Length: 397
Image (cartoon, rainbow, N blue to C red; front, side):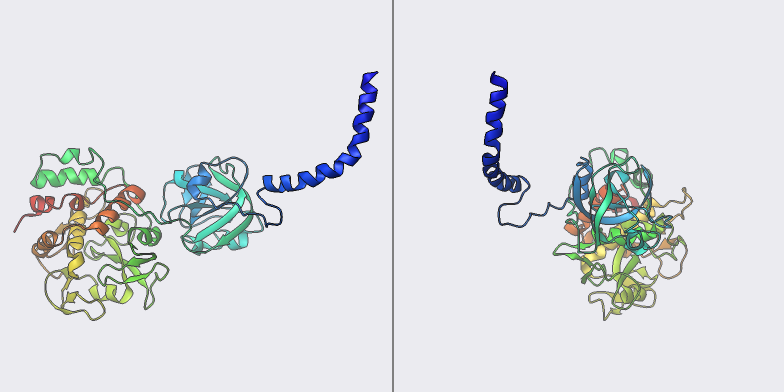
C-alpha cells in the first residue's frame, strides 16, 4: 500500500533533514527581512507626507513633516485655538493650508502630554518624525497607533524651491487689451477671486518658505537689511526678525486680521529693530544712512530701501492699492504723492514709479510670487508678472 509506506519514508527523513533546512532557512529569512547575516537590521526609509498620503497600505511607515494644525473632520483643520490633544496634521510645507496635502496623525495617550496641540500650541511649524500605521484617520489619509514621535531635527523635506514660471494661461485674460482704470478694475477682480487668506500666526511659517535664502535653506533673507538670518530667530526680541507690513497697518487701520493684515504679497521678514526704525513712514528718496541696515536711508517721514529691493517695495505697494478697493469690507487703499500723515493711503507715488523702472523683478521676487500663488493665497502680484502695467494704471511721470 503505497500511502502509508510513503508517509513513513517522509517521516524518517524529517528529523535529519530538519537541521539542514533550518541552517539554510535562517539566513534566507534574514535576507528576506532586509538583514544580511552578521549585519544590523536596515531602518526603513523615512517618507515625505506626500509619499505617506499615496501609500495608505495599512503597513508601518515613518514619516517626517511640519506640524500645521489639529484635524477635526475629513476636510477641517484648526490652525489655532486648538480644542484637543488627540490628533495633529503634518504637511511637507510648514505653511500648508490645503487639507488634501496633509497627513492626519492620531496621538495616543502616551504622546498627548508632549504632542497634543491644545497643550503644546508652540509645536505649530516644527518638524515632526512619527512612526505608525499608514491608514485612514478621520476618513482622511492618516497615520494611526504611533510607536514613536520625535519633534525637531531640522527641515523634514527640502523647502520648495519655487520657479520663475509665467502665470497660467488665461490668468490675466480679463485684463487683455485694457489700460488705465479699466485695467485696474480687471486686475482687482482677478487677484481678489478664489483666494485663500491666512491667519497672522500662519504668516510666520509662510515667510520661512517664501523668503528662504537661496544659498542657505535654514535662513530667510531680511527685506531692508538684506541679512540672511536663521528661520528660527523669529519673534519680538533683539536679534529676532518679525513680520514687516510694507504697507504700514496705520495707513489703512486693517490690523492683523485675515485680509490686508496677513497678505503675504506685502509681508516680509525684517530685523525687529530695523522694522521699528521704518515704523509707518512713507517711501521716498533721501535721508540719512540707517546704521544697522546699510543702503537704506531715512528722515522724519520717509524711508528709502536699499537699491536691490526698491522695485520689490514699489510693486508690493501697487499690488495693495489694486487688491484692496474698499468693496469687500477692507479699506480702499490708495497711493499718492504726499509724505507723512496716515489714513488709507501711502506715498510717494513718484518715487515708487521710479523704483519700479530702476529695479525690475529678479529671480527671488519671481519665485516668491509663484510660491504665494501656488502654495498659499492662490493669487499673484500682477506688477511682478507685468511691471509695465504700473505706468498704465499709475502714470509714467
